Image 1 (spheres, rainbow, N blue to C red):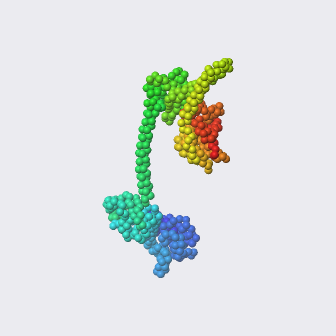
Image 2 (image 1 turned 180 degrees about the horizontal axis):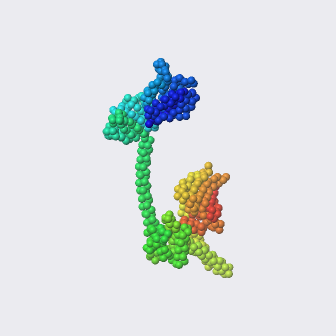
Image 3 (image 1 turned 90 degrees about the vertical axis):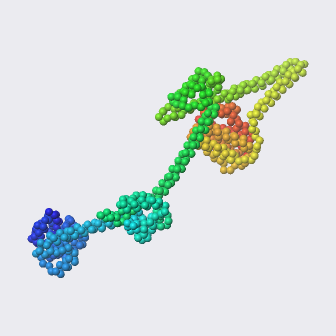
Length: 622
């Protein structure tokens, strides 16, 4: 049984039953609705879909013409067959022209089933054709709106169709391409072998994929990623070729750029590796050549690396484990001092610096400045390794001891002739008759004092082996700028923020450029050395009436108030400075003061322990 949905427009119930009986006998399973008014017909069209409309032509409230008109107005594609009692030939022609699919006389209902079958087939054919046309239109719109470049050619490669994206990229109009061979966009840069492989593949019925470099109408080259295949009939005959292309010009440019960057990066890595290798060789050369004893120990005390000076200072055993350093120390007090410092460095990650005496392999004694610096050896080890640096300060200690002896000797040498003069004067008063004898003795003592003063003056001149001599008109800002430029990268390595704020205009003054630059170098060097990492150093020049002022301010360790009066003395170093890892002779600030004094200027300092210091130089313009 074939299901059939029938909308029956009939005012006679008997005729309706007769029609339904004929269709049922023809093998249809009927679902129907009978209407006989315009309103009923309109409602039925809107509430359900129908396979066929069967309508009487003449009814009291309705007619077949009304049925046809309302059906056409609805826009529904439903076959309409007029089933009428008596109708003339002219009227039948009018009915067909008006839109009826067919007409059947009620007296000849046997003709209804075949007529209905025919109309149902034609309706189905119309629907299939409309669906196909809709799909074609949809595909056509998709091709036109696609971002891909689409081209269809005949089997010989002559272009039959291109979409809008193809014309936009190539610059050709569609009319300039259709009917022309596809080689119109071919460039000479793609190897002939690529085209040969492409044609061999698609002529064999397979799909070819590859990259081509084509040419636009204006001559510019562009890259496309292409998929090309044949369009075949049901029998397998190729009627056309379809080419779908993606513009990959930008991607190819980026690939080329990336390749260039990759090559450049590889070259830079090679150069950097070579630089690191050279730096490593240089560091090894420095470590092997320096007189400072250096070693790197793990947190468990095992020595990882040492330089020759370390072995010379502490012995062969110390190259294996850090505790063997203690074996080289001179006495138990120093063993306790250095041992406690090692424990604090390893467990508290605090840098320590101590002075000690060691007994070297040849049995001689040596004074050392021992710096113990925590170093993180691994992210997984919460304890720090230790960098050991021991500097031989025997000479410095000898100088300090010589200085103490020199002062004591100078006091003694001054006291002796003075005491002699006092004694002779007393004796002369008691025995004036012995004047000649006492005058000779007094002359000897005066000669002794004169010689002593001459020797001290000679030592002072030796200390000042670079005297103020080359005086010229110079700009202070230029000299300070040179020093700033020298120390800026050094401060950057320590993550210090060093700044220079020059006065907008400064008059030129008479200076010895070399000696004044030495002053600024000493002050800035001290600021960099005694300022912790990530702290600030600020250099400033100003004009204060008839005086040029230079300030060097830091956020360093500072100087205690009890030490400020002595910092410009020779050989004097505050304990805070000695406790840092930086070394110094104690002469720098005394040299600064002597040079500035000789230029007629003044140097002063303001400092707070733990917060920093500000050194101020004031130079008269005249």
